[in-house]
Image (cartoon, rainbow, N blue to C red; front, side):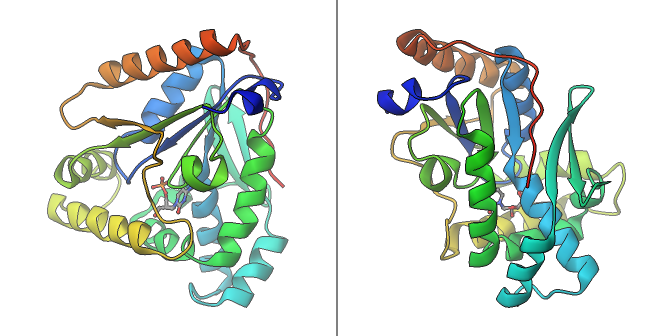
Amino acid sequence: MNESSAAGRKNGLIIAIDGPSGAGKSTITKLLAERLGYIHIDTGAMFRAIALSASRNGVEADDDRGLEELCRSTDVVLKRSNGCCMVLLNGEDVSHAIRTPEISALTSKISARKPVRESLLKLQRRMGEQGGVILEGRDIGTVVFPDAEVKFFLSATAEERGRRRYLELAAREQVTLEQTIAAVISRDENDEKREHAPLRCANDAVIIDSTRLSIEEVLESMEKKVRERVSEQQTCFTDGREICGK
Ligand code: DC
């Protein structure tokens, strides 16, 4: 932990939660943020919004110039509404539209491109630098905030993660369990093997394998860790702010 950086943050600690898709990051991060009175920043949703915008504007996943221009001209905002995190793309609520299997697959490709990573990196740092935030993603503890005071790496077996994703998707999409597990494994491969900011566990992250743990058990152990750090740092929690994008 980097004590000098924490002392300089106005609103509390920076908590990084990284891990592969379907590990439970979104559910856990949302609940942990509520318990701590921290802001939840879903960085995957930001990449998804850019992917949706690329798809709508006919920008190919390997067109770096087109992606750079798209990022410059696209407004991505995360907004809290009734306890939920809404994703606004140029003012339009796209919270559901960014969660289809097609956009998931496209996001995995687009999030590997340098101009997209650079653009969102700046935005994520601006959103989190004052502290009092939990950011979930793939590279938060390694690239976005390597000096975050608390880092978690949340994982589970590919089969379990695929099963969880399937339960979420099956209500609204025509998918099978096998297809969903295969999609999870393929996205893991893209995220781990890419050149820019690959999915990696930070050396100083607390590793949690959630395969056989309940949400409550995961939350308990994370909250305990955070509270230990907070009492070490004597940092105050804050409430009730809105997170804005660019
Ligand atoms: O967490 P998620 O499933 O919503 O993420 C969607 C995609 O975005 C996933 O393929 C990995 C990518 N991503 C990333 O590269 N870096 C992040 N910080 C967050 C997500």
